[in-house]
Image (tube, rainbow, N blue to C red; front, side, top):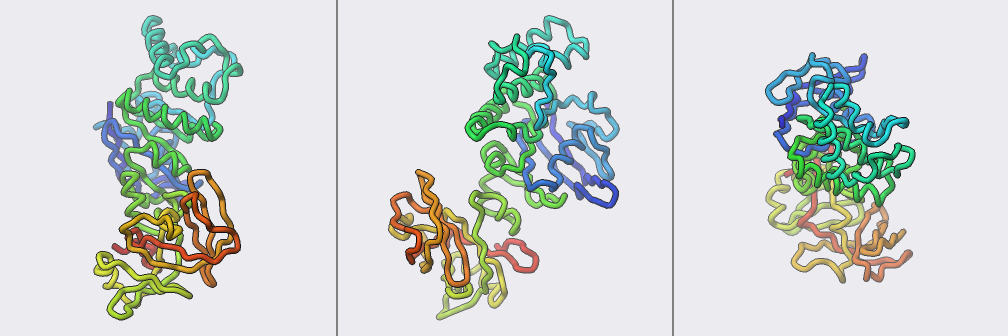
Length: 366
C-alpha cells in the first residue's frame, strides 16, 4: 500500500499548460477522484503518475519513492482505461494472467490471483470465454480484474465506466466502491461525471484549465464551493446564478436582483454586510427552490413570483424551469406540485442555503 504525492507538478505541451502547479497529497487507501470538463488536465495528471507522460516541472512520489524517472512498469501501479483494451484472441483467464506471465510469476501464484480476482468481481464462470462473448459490463470487470491480479500499490482508473449504459454504470459504481473497501488500496479515479465523483470519492479534486480549483470531501464541495466554477460544476442540475447587489433596506440586508429582492437571513447577514453595495453573483441550488406548499418547515423563505416555462416529471420530483421578467431559475419541486406550464406561481427560496460570489474574482464570499 502507498500514498501518492504531487509536488508542484506542471506539464506543458509546447506553449499549452495542461497541468499547472498541481500540489496534492493522497493518503494511503484513499479513493481520490479527479473531476472536471474535457481538457481540464485530469487525465494528464493520471498519465503523469503512471509514467506515460514526462513531467515538465515538479516531483511525484509513490510512498517515499520519487518516481519521476522510474519506468511505468516499475512504478507498481495498475491502470484501467476508458477503452478496455482486452486481447480479442485470448480467453478471460489469459487476459487477466497476461501481465503476470510476462513477469514470470509462478503458475500456481497466477492461478491463485486470477481466481481470487474473478471471485471478487463475480466473473469466475467466464474465465474460458473470449471478449467478444461478453457484455460491456462483463468486459469492464475483466479489465478491472486484470489490474487487481497485479496487486499494485495504486489503482489508476481513467473513465472506466463511460462505455456502459446508464443502468450498468450505477451498478459498476457500487462495485468499484465495494472493491476499494475490500482491497484497502489507494484508488485514483478520473471522470467528467460529477455524479460518479460525488458517489465514489473519499475526496474530490475539481480541475479546470489545468488548475486545481478545490479538493475536499463530496459534501464539503457541495455545501461550501470555493468559487463560481466549483459551485456550477458540482450538483445536478447545476446551481442557479443571478447578478445582484447587496443592499440594506429597513435595517435588513437584501440581495437585490433585477426585478425582485430577497431578504438575507440574520446569521448570514453579518458575513455579507461587509460587502454592502457591491455587485455580486447570487447562487441557489435547484433543490433549494420549492413549491411553497411543500417547502420544508423551519427554513428562511424568500418568496418570488415566476412563470412556469417547462416542467420535467422525474417520478420522485418535478424539475421546473421558471422565468421572471429578467431572470431564469430551475427548481426541484415535490411531485405533488400543481405547477403547470404557463402558470404564474409563488416560489419559495431557502435562503439558509444561499451562496454569494464576488463578481470580479468569482470567489465565494464567506
